[in-house]
Every structure is written in structure tokens, then in C-alpha cells.
Image (cartoon, rainbow, N blue to C red; front, side):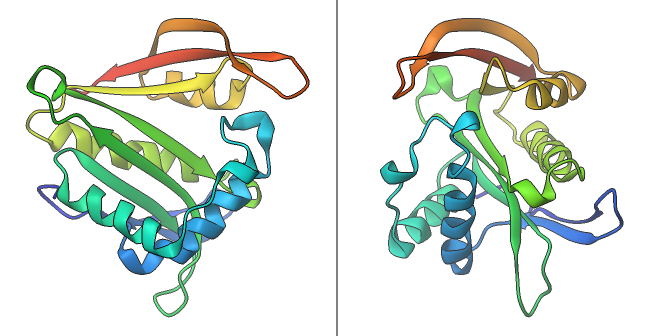
Length: 189
């Protein structure tokens, strides 16, 4: 469990309010809808839509694990109300249990198409980086991004991530073409 609960009120660039908060098991069905929405854009994802088959129970278990494992968290951008939540984006972080890797972990992030360009992804990443900096053992936040995803690359660079390595032709598509992957890191301590 994280040392303190994350809950931040934010505003999109066009003035809509949203809350960044830790995911709860009750968010499981919404997170599945969110993931399926994101996976409809294969240009940005490593997972094919047919490969995603999480059930609500499995999603609840994933959320529970993030709350109980060291250095794990799932943050959501909730643009709905307290009566009717609506997840527009999420970021997850998973650390390592082994002593020699306990200082680092990786993140995954996704913002649904209608909410992109509104500052939600940046707000989620800033909240995650603040959380990581407060975690006593965490020093290093890692991510991987397709080399052609310029919008994401620009955001990561803006927030202080640096390119650490590049994996050429790391992903092969059904049509036989390839995507390169850039591995990035930010030291939070």
C-alpha cells in the first residue's frame, strides 16, 4: 500500500473538472471498458484487441494487487461525478520485489481518444512521479514507447524522462511491418 492516498482535483484545458485518484475494486468494470477503448487503436498499443480478455474478477484482483504489493499503484483520471464515475485515463506502476531491483519499476498509461490533448495524461504522470518520489525505496521510473509516438515522446521528455535505449523492430504487426521501441527512464531521487 502506498504511504499516502492519492486524490487530486484537476481541470482539463477546456475547463472540465476531473479527479486523479487511486483505482478501487469498484472501478474494475470501468477499467475494462477503458482498456477496450484504448485497444481499438492498434497504432499505439502492443496488445491486439482480441488478446484482452480480462474479467471483472481478474481486474478486481489486479487492482487489489496494486494496493498490496510494494511499489504498486493504479491511478485513474475520473471525469465523472461521485455518483457516476467515468474513467478517461489511467496510469499503472509496478515495482519489483527482488532486492536488487526494488529501486525501479515500470509504468503503463492510456488516455481515451476524446480526452487527449486536454492535459489528462500529463496530470496522471505528474501524480505518479510525485507518488514515486515519496516512495522510500523507489529511485527509477521506467517506460517503453513506440518510436513513432511523437506526442507521447514529447510529453515524457517534458517531464524529464530520457531515452535509455532503442529496440529496433521490437514489435511485428500482422501485415509484416515493424515498430521500434524506445525505453525511457526518469530518476525520481
